Image (cartoon, rainbow, N blue to C red; front, side):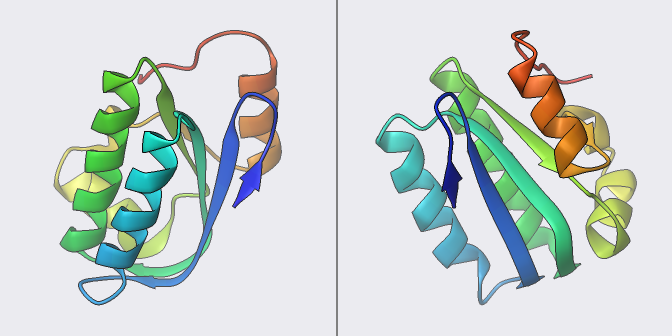
Length: 115
């Protein structure tokens, strides 16, 4: 996790599935409880994501919004991209192509909101 003055970057690698999702959910929930409610989730190196992983991302999105924060996804592709399309959840998340693009968006002073 990379904590910056106004937001944090969480980088996901490997698989986000029923065995790894609970661990991520715990870490993100604790992070949000400690007041880190502006999150950029970098999925560029995520190789696989199942419905459990989508649920963790959705839950974390809701938790940040409840605390007047936000959550953005970066580098959505592969299984995650297909799942977001199939479930029609792609529009629930602000999504940027690259981390650099996302950092420009969040550093620009505007509050990023879902499309």
